[in-house]
Structure formats: C-alpha cells, structure tokens
Image 1 (cartoon, helix red, strand yellow):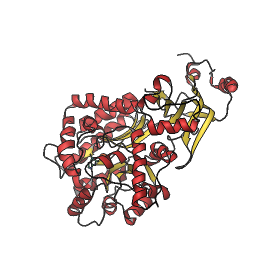
Image 2 (cartoon, rainbow, N blue to C red):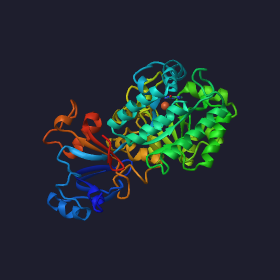
Image 3 (tube, rainbow, N blue to C red):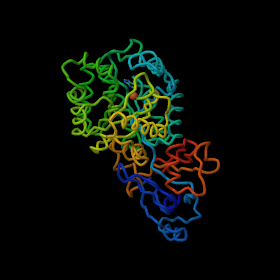
Image 4 (cartoon, helix red, strand yellow):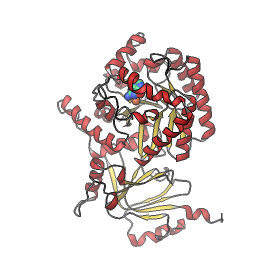
Length: 456
Ligand code: GUN
Ligand code: FE
C-alpha cells in the first residue's frame, strides 16, 4: 500500500445525527459532520455545517464530498449509535417464539434445555451461531452480551463467529451443575470451572486487547449453580478485574422461592451473589423484577447494571413488570436485553417498544407515580444506557469525539420505508425519529458499523 493509503481511509457523514445526552435528553444534530479515523475512532463531530462548507471541513482528512467514503444523508436518513443488547442467549436462537405459558423451570426443562443441548455438536454450533450473530447484526445490534451453552467448544465457536463477523460481544460459557437434567448439566463444579478458565484463555488469545470480544463469567442463576461453582467464579472474577459477570436476578417468584430453599442462609439474592463475589460494577443482572428497597439499594451501591428484558418478562408463563422508572430516578445503570429466546423477538427495536408498554403497566400499578418511558428514554436504554451497563460508555453509546464509531445508518424512504414507517413531506426530524422507534424494523437499518467497519 502507498504511504498515503491511510489518509484515504477516513470516513465521513454529513446530515442528521441523533444520540443521547442523558437518560431523558437526546441531541438531534442537523447538518452534522462526523469524521471517523482509519482506527475506527470518531475524530470530529460538528453541528450546523452547510453543504457548501463540507469540502473545507474534510480537506485535512484527505476527503472530499465526492469520496466514496463520504456519505451525505438526505432527508429521512440519519445516524444513531448501534444498539446494545445487554442480555441474550445465543443457543436459544432457534427457540424464539416457543414456550408461551410455561413458567421458568418448566420452560427451561421442556423448551430451553433440549435446544441448548444440541450445541454439544460443534458443526451445529458453527451453523447456528453464524445465523444467530448474523441475525443480530442485521437488526442493528453492534454490541451483545451473550450467554453460550454449557459447552466449551461451542462457546469458543460463538466467540470466533462474533470476532469474524465484526460484532462487539461479551461471550460466556454458561455454568450450571445442579437443578438441571443429566443430559444437560456440568459434570461437576471442577469441570464447570475448568471449562470456564480454558474458555477465558481462548478468548484472550482470540482477541488479546478485547478489541471486540471479551469473555464474561456466566453462572446461569443460583438455582443451577452450587456453592463451589459460585465461589469459584467469584475467585476468577477477583483475579481478573477486566472480566464482566452476568446472571439472572429476581426474575420470577418460582425461581426466587427455589433459590431460598437451596440457599436458606441468605435472605435475598443480593446477599447471595455478593457473598460469592459476583456483585460489582461489572455485573449485568437480567430482569431485576421483584425488588424491594434492600435489593435495589444494594445494586445501586454496588453499581451493578440492570438488563431490562421486557419482551421475555411479559410473554413467558410469568408476567413481570420491572421498576425501570425507579432505576432511572436513581441514575442506576440500566439497558435493554432481547433475552431471545425468552421472548418472541430478537429485535432491540421491539424491546424498546415493549419497554414502553410495560412502563404503562407500571404507571397503572403505581397509581400514576411511575411515569411511562419517553421516546428519548427508550432510545437511551437501547444505546447509552446499554453502554453504561457494559461499562463501555467511555468507548461507545454516543458519537462523542474519541469514542469508537459503532453506528446504524437509518433510512425511512423508498425501498427502506418497509411497510410501516411512513414519512410525509410535513414530518419533522423528530417525527421521523419517533416513527422509526415506534414502527420501524430492520428494513430501516441500511448499514451497520462497528469500530468504523461496515458489517451490514
Ligand atoms: N433463568 C435461568 N436460565 C434462564 C434463561 O435461559 N432465560 C431466562 N429468561 N431466565 C433464565
Ligand atoms: Fe435470560
């Protein structure tokens, strides 16, 4: 390559850019100019640049308005930060839509475990994880926190597929050595932990700087892990301060009762997981539905992240309404999870909308005290909120200079109008944005970027 090659590798966009400023405020930047360096980092974000001034602004990057890596976004098109899916079960990809009406233990035993057990076969894992990761990228998920199956080999394949397809991902070997059927259970605590350590070593080799892929500790939930596994994972967590942790937390009454009977020495799940060294600022806790002041206070103090999964919370056998308004009031870290296949959808756009519907139920339950989510808040949960949950808000979640360019190019006109998102001449940019959030789908996501690379 010529010595000047890198200068032509800058990428730039001119047009409407939308990102969160706080949980409640978004910035709709009109005539924005965004420049991305060859290393994928945002190096320039300017507002109100007239079309005629674009060339002047681009010259220092070796770009002009005619360069192939320059994109002018016309009316109806805009850039948003990529979606962050803070809770996702990759081996449940093929079970989405199944299992309505079953409460957690029956759902796990009858619907989930038979699907996850198939990942003992690496060939099946290769094929299915390719479809799964490709499917999430197509729907605009630039960062996902994945539970794998319990299998070391298949989970390595998942990590490799994420890396190859260019998705940013946390990937975890699922630990589960009790309360599970013999055909789908870790053989012992020692094996559960050694497969985890081997998996962590594999990911460190695959992606030494965690440029995209990071291993995550993944005790399925306390019901499925004995004290040796929970304590062993806590030790790994304390020895590896860069490794995040994920589990399910206060998801259903049935699960909470079983947890109590298995671990009678703890009054609640906060004390349980904290005791084993699994609750800290790197923890991503799915659901967090049935919360009293003690549990909420512990998660707030320990700076744990909450993965809100409104689709699965309301479409499996139990119907749970998580107190998201309370988390936002306290400025706790909260983002969205598809929890697919816990629900029918693997779309973060669907999760945004269902979060809104659930927040209306919450309003009813609290006699109007907990106001429903606004469009801005739904969008925040899907982007910057998720980045905070993953402790990646210094790197992604907005278009701030210095962050990586993880973004979606949204189109709402012509072939991208889908059948729902319908834009009129008189629609304002706010209208177009609201229509996209409330009625858009993957047909509106024209291109997907992670760290400056186009991956859709
Ligand atoms: N609790 C334990 N395992 C699971 C799972 O796979 N999905 C959900 N939603 N909850 C769980
Ligand atoms: Fe889950």
